[in-house]
Length: 116
Image (cartoon, rainbow, N blue to C red; front, side):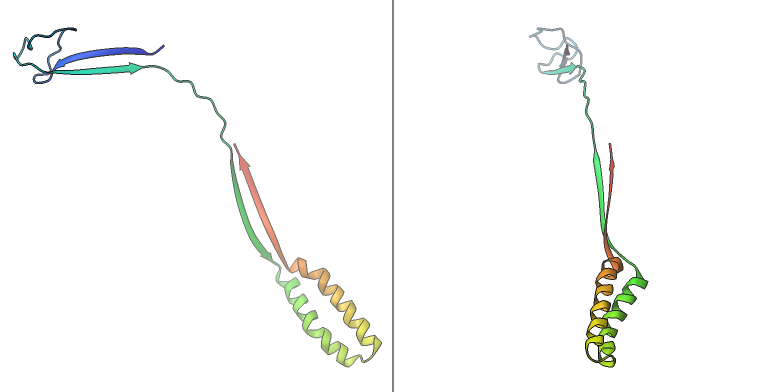
């Protein structure tokens, strides 16, 4: 239960006046009051706070990236050297290898850290 306190003082000399006093201040003889009211109590608070930190970035693997670029640039020249169906099959196989290695060269990484 909150506790309430009232304090009545003279506005001029700050002398404490009795409750209900309507006459001039007994100390300085002037009229004027300053009334202070204070309330004291207790509040209980309980809660739970959580947080989350996210970080997204692209992770590059240089060796895989160079390999994909070399295969992509070299496949047409290999097809030029190996004419006919052999060149077509070799180009398709190299394209499949580049397709498989490509996602390894640059990968999106998401780190999530939680606390609470």
